Each structure stands twice: as structure tokens, then as C-alpha cells.
Amino acid sequence: MSEFKFKKKYGQNFLQNKNIVKKIALTATVSPNSLIIEVGPGSGNLTVPMAELYKDSNILAYEVDNSLEYILFDKIKDYNNVHVLFNDFLKADIVSDIKKYSYSNLYFISNVPYYITTPILFKLIDSDLVFEKIVMMVQKEVGDRFCSGVSKKEYGALTVILNYYFNIKKEFIVDRNQFYPRPNVDSVVVSFTNRKDKEKLIDKDFFLKLVHDSFQYKRKTLRNNLKKYDLDKVSLVLKKYGYDLNVRAEALSYKVFVDISNALS
Image 1 (tube, helix red, strand yellow):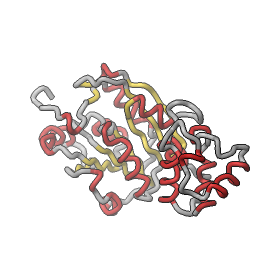
Image 2 (cartoon, rainbow, N blue to C red):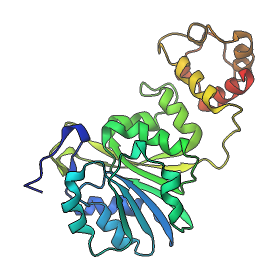
Image 3 (tube, rainbow, N blue to C red):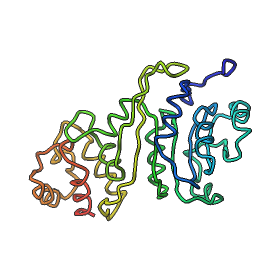
Image 4 (tube, rainbow, N blue to C red):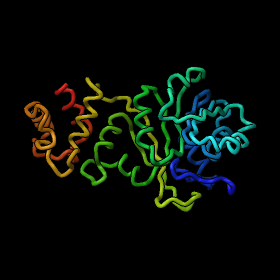
């Protein structure tokens, strides 16, 4: 990779440690005859170990940087279970892209470009595709937000929304010195599995807006942040959980927001 010019705009920091790469691939415990989606394969450092570990499954990789084509294709030329689309994943129609594959289970395993971590997660949610498991390496502080508990400083709208959809687990930390070029932060591998028991939402878009509005001013109470909503209905739901309108959003679990959303929808 010494001849390759790394591009900051694509968030290119390539993981060098092969043992860590293999550990990421194994975190998903992919079942036979599956389809794995990867975003940002780069030079194939994760793609190749996945191709070797899961020979009876297909890998569909999205890479936005066309200049990596010669490096990536040289790495994967011996693997007929790897398919690369030089396309922006955030603009891709993934539902249409995967129709050509026959598979039993769907996985997402990726060392994602950090600057689009959250948009990628929301694209996966919006696709309505059922993933057996999602495994991502993200910035450590972002992983802390994903996994934060109620009332902790990292707890926010993103935590609430993701915890409605997924059981989230920090798998292991990856030191910044394991990358080239070296980033300024450590990373963490996080796994997401669908909540089988998640509560029914009457209006998903309304729920998302409600949660974001509730955290609009983090130090303000719901009474202040939700002035434009029917506060009588909000109050009734809060009372059921032992709270009132003077509570801050950071004190409430995702289940409370689901109840408020449904009461107002």
C-alpha cells in the first residue's frame, strides 16, 4: 500500500494487524449459505479473511474509491465468493442489489468509514432488511454512545433509537496504533442483533422526531423540549413510569419514548 495515496475525504485508515482482522470476522459467527455485506473494503484486509473463513457464503462489498480497484481485485482474484460494487453505499439500492443472491441469513460486517457510521446504521434500519448480526468497527467514543446506559453522559437520542432496534454489545477495543495511517482515536468493535421482542411503533418517523426533539437541549426538561406536543398525554405516560414533565430525556429508557410516541401518534 506504500504507493497508494490515502484520501481523508473517504476516512481511509487501514487496519494492519491480521489477528485483529480475523477476530472481527469471527465475531459474527456467520452461518453457512449466508450473504455478508461489507462497506469500505479498501485493500481487502477484512474481505479476504472473511472469504476464507466463510467459503460457502457470498460477500457483497461496496467501495466508493475507484482508485483502489487494482489493489482490491488483485487481493480477491482467487475468491469467487467476493463481489465488489464500486458505488457509494449510502446512495445504493441495497434491497435491489442483493436480490440476485440466494442466502439463508444476512450479515453486515465492516470496518466502516468513521465519518458515515451513523448514516450507514440508519440506512440498514430503513432498508427493513433482517440482519442476523451487524458487526462494525467504530470510533471508541461513538461506540460508547451506542452502548451507554440511562443517565450517563454519553446517553442521547442516538442511544435511544438504536436500542429500540438492537441489542448492542461492545466486543473489544482496537488501539489506534494498529492502523495506517494512524488515526487520532482508538476504536471499538460493536455488534448489533435485532431485538426479537421490540415493542410495536405506530409511527416510526414520529418516534424518531420525538426522540430528537426530547434531546434538543440536553439540560432542559421534557416540559421545555416538547412544548409543541400534547403535554397532557406525555405527562400521563411519564406518570406510569414514576416521572413527571420535569424529567430530562437522559433519564428515560427507550421504552418510555416508545410509549410516549404511541400515545401521541
